[in-house]
View (cartoon, rainbow, N blue to C red):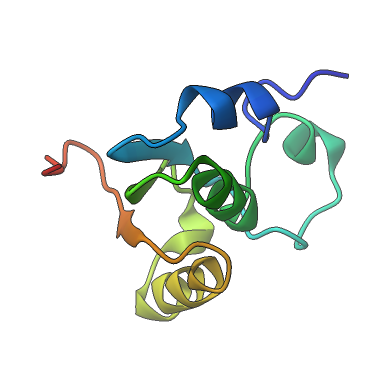
Length: 100
């Protein structure tokens, strides 16, 4: 089964060396095994690995769900992403302007 929003090598190749990568962050990896989610969406570690492998300068996490609301959830998100991706991380919000 294809994973349209999940990690794919084509996205990594396409974003190689980009200034910024806007990437879906729909769930914490490892918190669900529901194939309706895992086969079609990316989690926080998926986004981090794609950004790392592509060598992008900035990772902008978008399409966040309610599970990422609150300071504690955002702190966990940032901490775990930083273990994989060592560039700048922006936790995006609707209608936010992001400077390159």
